[in-house]
Image (cartoon, rainbow, N blue to C red; front, side, top):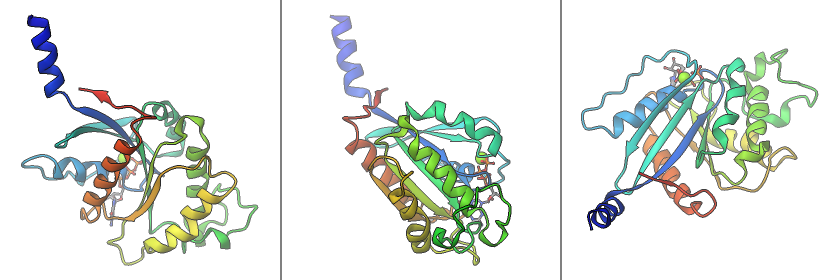
Length: 223
Ligand SMILES: Nc1nc2c(ncn2[C@@H]2O[C@H](COP(=O)(O)OP(=O)(O)OP(=O)(O)O)[C@@H](O)[C@H]2O)c(=O)[nH]1
Ligand SMILES: [Mg+2]
């Protein structure tokens, strides 16, 4: 009898937990975003906006009315990107964060096709091509197949940022529709400023709705 009641109690009080993976080049704003999300979902939270480059990972679980969101923030430096793939098979959504002040004019169409993204001659374009190559790599990995992807055009508070529509049309759409765009998946491009918090709530709402829609193919963990 005890076990029956315990089981019923646990069933009634447990919630679905979904994992969200924050990806993007180093300095894009992943850790800052995690800090904003954490602060927005804790009663007396102030975000710690003094970030340092992430070596390894930061993880936080936020409690929402109908689910837990476990958010994984990993280092974006070149030497650390090889570690990303170990997170792919267990994540329910990916956030790909772009520094909107470091992608030139945001238009891949103007980049030479022989540019290999090593940085040579990239000044005018910032890290546009590096960003493309890294995003393609994520999309092409079989373990991310079908996983909803939210692309955030971050640092929209800065005057020198490229606006979201250009990032969407000039970069993201071209990558998703290109031959290395991987399988069809649920995706969205949103503007945000992880530093000021603008757009962060919309991002979390999009993620919550999409992980639920996709729960048949990536079931949550019960906690
Ligand atoms: N103006 C502005 N600065 C931002 C924004 N988001 C992040 N930054 C700044 O960008 C720098 C890098 O931010 P991080 O959050 O540490 O970047 P990261 O993506 O975690 O970098 P790695 O850990 O190296 O992968 C910091 O100086 C942040 O204050 C933003 O929305 N606006
Ligand atoms: Mg970081």
